[in-house]
Length: 417
Image 1 (cartoon, rainbow, N blue to C red):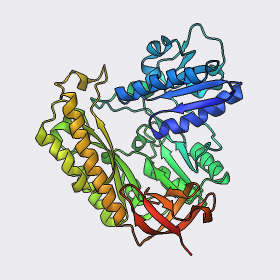
Image 2 (cartoon, rainbow, N blue to C red):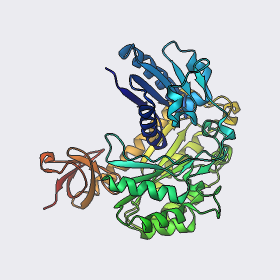
Image 3 (cartoon, helix red, strand yellow):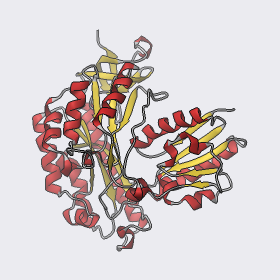
Image 4 (tube, one colour):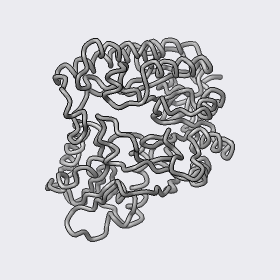
């Protein structure tokens, strides 16, 4: 098997970069290879990447194995020391095709990501095997949450110019994509480094005006305290912006939020969700939550647990706290590992119950579904829908679906007459 394979871990930004790497590497002449795009948000993510590297070597003994992404940026020597690895590229280097094939003095090509000041947009005409496209609008992060190592893997916040973003999205729409997701590391920081300091809300307004043929626009994870007035108005009144927000909340206790160096309070998170839902009743929310952050007491954990109801959260990404060397939180008094896992399980159980309740409430309603694969897709609120007669569905596009039943984790729909 002589093909270029990309194994992708982590966030939606990695999904965008995976396609950029594929296009760049193929253009440079790399074919019999496996690119492993790593994540560093938790120790488990790093462990899974190492496991995937070993498996790739067993399955592709003659292929070139290139390791890149956030974990490779932070620990290049550790990955280079693996016998299975041929080349380690940093997060900046992985986006330039020549770096996949040029001779190296050793295995490693990783520069200081903190010195990077500009972000070049890459024109990606499509995403293999996907009906939803991703558009990077921002990269890096200027904040220093005490648990997070990602700013040191991604560098300072940099934004793609509005013109480049509009051009990219026009190309994606011309190539048949009905939904585009704006993604980045901290997209609510968009524009701080650009002339005139345009906000994310201003970017979204311009996009919608400039590309009127785009049916659906979705936003990736948002920092709740940085949703600017323009963005809030767009979320409330622009139907082409999907009524589904994923919020970076992390905890529901004010003291824990302070120790995390988060910039919002519990009350601000609750108020945001209530305000948006009051203006747009079909809005649903997801959130990242960390279980067992250092010093977290049982009472403080219960505040995070109750945040699911208080904010009306539907989709949860739950992480047991994972120590990352070099972060302030790693030096704080730690919650025992088994207790972190117990709390994470409770958060997940409550999140699953919340999702099941939301899905039950959709039965009998009509939804607009983006087809992602034969017979299934996502609603505007990001609910998974499986069609009861998949053979009757078109292969792609947006269709009207009547919801006839619900399971704990997905809806069952029928193509509307």
